[in-house]
Structure formats: structure tokens, C-alpha cells
Amino acid sequence: MEISFAPFHGISFRLFRNVYLKHFPYFDNVISPFIPVAKAETLTKALFRDILPNDEKPLIIPQIIGNDTDKITDTVLFLQQLGFKQVNWNLGCPYAPIVRKKRACGLMPFPDEIAQIIDNICTKTNIRFSLKMRLGMYDKEESLRIIEQTNCYPLDFIVIHARLGIQLYEGQTDWEAFENCLALSKNKIIYNGDIFSIEDYIKYITRFPQQKAIMIGRGALQNPFLAAQIKGHVLSEQEQKHLFALFYQDLTETYINHYTKENVLLNRLKELWKYFSVFYHLSPFQLQSLLRINNYIDFERQTNKLIEQK
Image 1: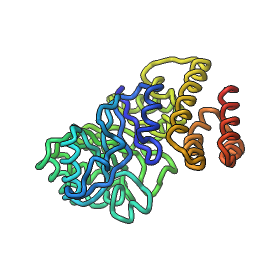
Image 2: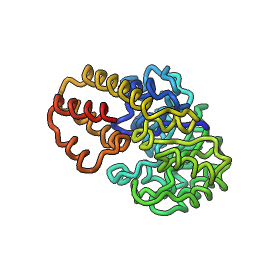
Image 3: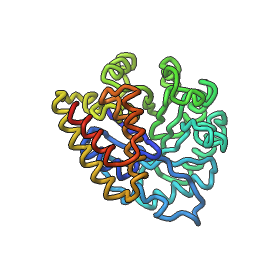
């Protein structure tokens, strides 16, 4: 099974990515947090410093966000000049400030515009171009219309998070609607959404045995060993405890060396513990108690205690 690591805006940047993937090297590729597109004259390497030099292992695929044909094309051409061979276009972010600007999921109700942009990319570049989208912003038919419009283009793949944008991350994923997308698409489809455990994965692959690729996101943070389990690596609880402790020590040392302001360091780590709390089976009360700590020494003491007790 090919496993992609989903983008996390504000989390899966290089600093975190390098440490995480060093300790949990089970992913075949990683989609970067999205990068806004720009006109050619304003593009510089500095805009892409989080993904340069492009020699990370596993493969890092830049993700762009935007709705302007010229800016998207200019940005893809610039990435191609930097040596990237693949680019992913974000059509899935559901958050209101993005959607209001008719970007990401906010563009899904307009399949003609999406097809026009893809046509421009296919005409003017030779990059391997892919999409990450949802079933739609408001209606499941939106994804089907996009697939119909783009079937004539050789897309590298289409990642589909099996929810509507208006759901954000609430409610159930819709496997029936995803199956309709599979049946219609002539391009490779990758599933994304609510694979949090090996049991979730088994249910998915039982329903879709022909699928050879999957993307996991929140599940990979809530259980850092999920990708390993999907690929058949069996680790005891004691081994998981030891490996996570090594990872977390490496991560905190890296963050301490990088973030000189205590509040920034704490905020970065607290955001991660919203996910790690699932791995450690923390109750909502325990998590809130941890998140209320306002100095690093106490936070470190408490997290070390949790790790030692696992």
C-alpha cells in the first residue's frame, strides 16, 4: 500500500517533518502545507524555503493554493525550474477565510474554471500535476462534475477527502459518494478521511480492495505507528513507548533550538499534544489541564511524566 502523509498547515513544516519522518519512515510521499501562488516577477526561492532544497526523503510534493490561472501557471513553472517534478493543487481546504476568496474548496462549485486552469498547466508545463479536493463544498455532485471535466487530462492523481467542505471535519465520511468518484474517474484516485486505526484501514480496504494508495493525516499524528501497522510492521506496546520517547526527545530539542520565545515553543507543542493526547488516552480534562500550563518547565515536566507512564 502506497501511503501519503497529508498536509497540516502550521504543523507539517520542515522542522517537524524532518524529525517525524526520521523516526516514523513509513510514508512514500508527503504533501507540503499549501503555498500561495504568485506572478512570475514576484516569485523567489524564499517563498519556498520550507521545501528547499528538494532532496527530502520520502518525496516532498509541493502543494499550491489559488484560483488565478496565470499565477498558478507561473508558480508551477517556477517550481519546475527549481527541480520539482510534481505539484499538488489544493481544492480541499474548507475554512471560511479561504472559501470566501473562492480558493480551495470554495472553487469546487466551478468545474469549468478548474478545468481551464488544468488545461493551461497541461499545455504550458510538463509537471506531474495532481489535485487534493473534497466531495464538494456544498454538494457531492461537485466532485463528479470536476472529474467529468478533468478526465481528459493526464492528472497524476486526485486525492479525495470523503466529506463536503461545509462539514469541515465533522460527521461521517461518505464511502458511497467516494465509490461514485472511483467509478467515474479515469485518473488515479487516493482516499483520505478518518483512517485513525488499523481497524479503520481494514474496513476501508475490505470495501475497496482494488485501491493501492491512501492518504492519512490526523490519524498519523494521533497514532504515529499507524503507517507502520498498515505496512505490516508489528510493534509491541513497549517498543512503541520507547520509540515515541526517542521521537519526542528529538522533537523538543529541535524546537527548543529553533524557537527562542517560550510562548511560541509552547504553542507549537500544545498544538501537537491535541493529537498526541489520543495516543496517550488522555481524557478531555487531562488534555485541558495540560493545555492550560503557561510555562515550558512545567509543561515539560508533565509531558515527561505522561511519556514515562505510557
